[in-house]
Length: 402
Ligand code: AMP
Ligand code: ZN
Ligand code: ZN
Image (tube, rainbow, N blue to C red; front, side, top):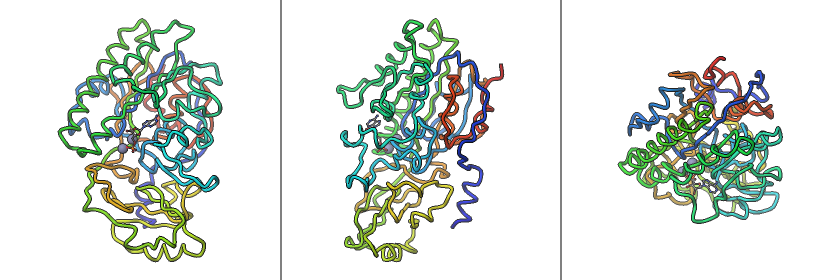
């Protein structure tokens, strides 16, 4: 098993603190958009003429998520350059043993508690160095992490939420502010095509339709940016948090068929599941799950190093990860699409398109990892980055030489 992972992940080591980079001028503006659940090959499957032309004008690449390939862990990785095991948002839901309660992205009480969010989001790094930022719904941006918000931000819980069109309007409004008020970095989040991908499946007509809508929205965002007085000074990055794969209720392993409830203190999350076992029961849980097809079971300290998922105290002492397209838990989720699987599975990998003055034109960049985005943004903004799990060398090649 270990050899398989070494082979799969061999190219992508998460080396801490390897960030030697010359500080650039940082005179341009950058907009980064996340289209949730936008798999790397959706352009080929569904057709994305606008994203294709953005890619031809600039850089195209495939980007790997961090483990697990889920929304909160990966958006916060994109913001901090740290893997989930290091930034603390180890899954969309997890058990907080210190306070004896569950964290859930869907529960505003725990979601909005800054204590859960370790590391430093790029908007804080920027502001500490006098650089303004604007934000439309990026995970973490409406939470007082390190006691501060982006210079401009929207609150996810405020309803009605901005429509997709209004989010583009907000990006343009921020870039149209007077020189001294204008943010250098604008981050914007869209919850599709993730939603349709889950409900209808990654290859469904409904997913194609919402991708067409997002594609033309990105086309109009780029045209409106170019029409601004500062248009030729704006970089645009379009990327995502994770991919999507087809699932079915038939491909399901039920925890209750194997594990006795009295062995467990808590069974948390899906893809992966963290099991907090009761004292003296870990071996029973491990033995019960050993050798079952379509799931991987590890002691926390034996999770393959390449997944970087074994140090946080928010992880159970047993970790169960289903194979791509399989589900493990108390019941199947009745979905046609899901994510959360291994980063090296192509279905979990995401789109990356970037154009503007700091990016090379018509350039196919080597595959890289999403921990590198924080470093890339710091470079574009001309701010000194915090130490991260990213590597500047993996993204350096896409930058235009002055
Ligand atoms: P997932 O379960 O991983 O597919 O999560 C996707 C969902 O995360 C979206 O449909 C949103 O409901 C939710 N979400 C995304 N961004 C935020 C945010 N900033 N605050 C709260 N919830 C969010
Ligand atoms: Zn997502
Ligand atoms: Zn999702």
